[in-house]
Length: 363
Image (tube, rainbow, N blue to C red; front, side, top):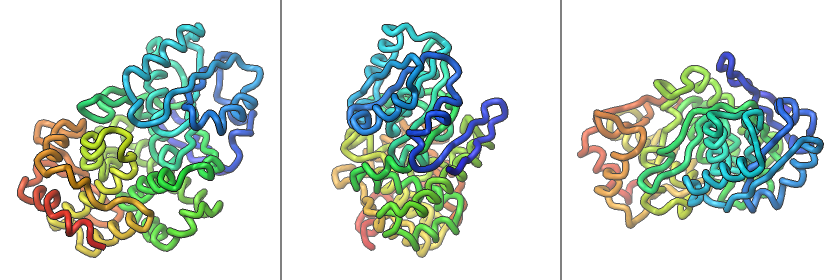
């Protein structure tokens, strides 16, 4: 087992990474302070892993709630199901909420933990690659609104994150590929050597080589933890983790949540952000091409949807939560492994990226 600490002073917590952690009852129980536990999962994940988790929590007063599976269920209506389950089973402020699942489960259960009786403790047990390397780490919790992704949420740090890499073996290929989008993102914005390592190990990573996937999860968690420890509430450098997300969230919103997976939308968003970075003279064509090629190598899309016009994309980006009084805010690259926030991009340059789709799709 490997452990990455996320240092937030009094809110510091450990991210434990290893195979078979769901069977480690002593470890899982070590951060549960009360006797009552409320497990939130979804129908797909529960069929695979809920019984194992419940066995590890035997002796505690455990209630479980299964949500429908999919980004389209990351809503206020689903959040209310969690509140109702907590109230019906008389959970109090000493309750610990455990999120067992991917990003939708983690974000929704985390927001419930942030707001139920003004806040209860929770634990993340992410079962998808995307959740393991990104959404389970850092305390961002939220649900979607029909007009925008993650518009309703709160910062609420978990007591711990338990990453059982064995759960990746049950992921469909499309879900696994979507997780690699966030892995690529971490290399692109923070570690050029890590990015080059990914280029060299695509096939082995897609085959879930135990040693290599363990390293990828750990390195991505290290990068995110280092950034979050410097900027918990996203007032500065943490915004760099949104590389690709301004474009990506617009794609998700337009297509309808669940039609494009989050990682797929972010992947295409990174291609577009790299293209815009190149048009602004921040990076070379070679770097933009390497990013596009690596994303394609991991079986991820490099083109935005054909039915999403430049005008629609701009309008959707204007209601993104990262937008400010200066307009649309982008996270762009100034070199491979180094990102920056850019405001006030000229619309003509943005239109070049949005409209020259043939160039984005060529490999």
